Image (cartoon, rainbow, N blue to C red; front, side, top):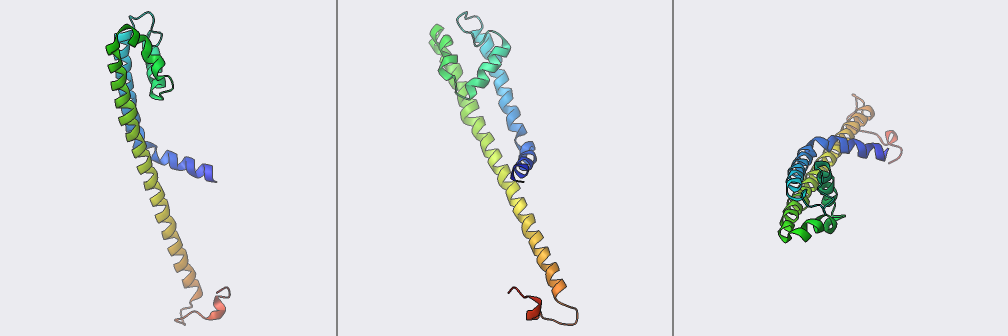
Length: 150
């Protein structure tokens, strides 16, 4: 019941935030290429040896689980390299991830509103149908015997 309904809502809202996910991935690839070009020559830096390592390191860095660990080998060689990581985190973490959250929230609210609206319309049509069944064509009122629970 509830899990299926939530999964359906997630799949209904996927098209709205695919664009933001693609933007997130685009910047991640750009910064991975840039990081590979800047830091692959540093033999002490295991995070940017290959393009794949760069992409994985930046993806994990986006979670901020290993923030200082990824930056420290490059920072030890050149203190100005911290600008790369600050710009990356500013764009990806503080701008695009917040944008993604806003789009997900807005889409979820829209789906909830549509669901509530359809439920309300369904209730109205059910009430109209029930009223039509209770009221015969000859009478213009509902007698008390027709509504025993009220």
